[in-house]
Amino acid sequence: MSTSITGEASTGNKRTKCNKKWGYVEDAKLVEVLVELVNRKGWRGDNETFRSGYLQQLERLMEEKLPGCGLRATPHIESWVKLLKKQYNAVTEMLETNCSGFGWDDINKCVTCEVDTFKEWVKGSCY
Image (cartoon, rainbow, N blue to C red; front, side):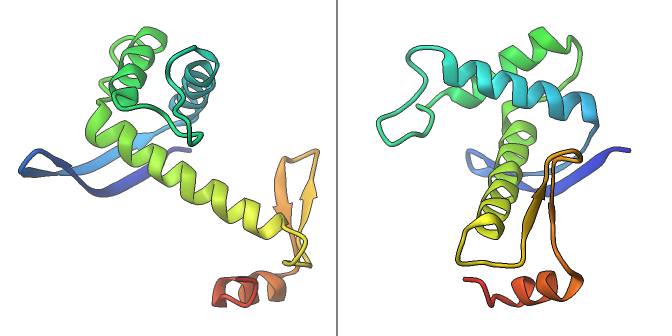
C-alpha cells in the first residue's frame, strides 16, 4: 500500500503540482533521516525547529539511503514533512489528558477510541 500526497508547492515565482506516491520504504527512510538530522550538530534552531537549508540536506540524505528515488526537497519532501507534522499534532492532541476517550495501542502502535469519540473530536469538541 502506498500513500499519495497531492498539493501545490511554490518554487520561487512558480507553483508546481506535487502528486508523488510514497511507499512504506520512503516513509521509513524519511523518518530515519529526520532523526539523523536531529542528532547531527548544527541543524537544530533555538526554537526546536530545523535551520534553513534542512530540506536540501534531507534530499541529499534520502538520495544516499534510496539511490534513484527522485525525491526532491520541493515539492516532495517539503509536502510530506508538512503532512507528518499535521498527523503528529493530531495524535498528540488526541492523547492529551483534556481529550478523554482516546488511548494508545502499544502492540499496533496506534490511537484507539470509540467511533462516537472520534466523530466528536473531528467536530472539534476536544479543542
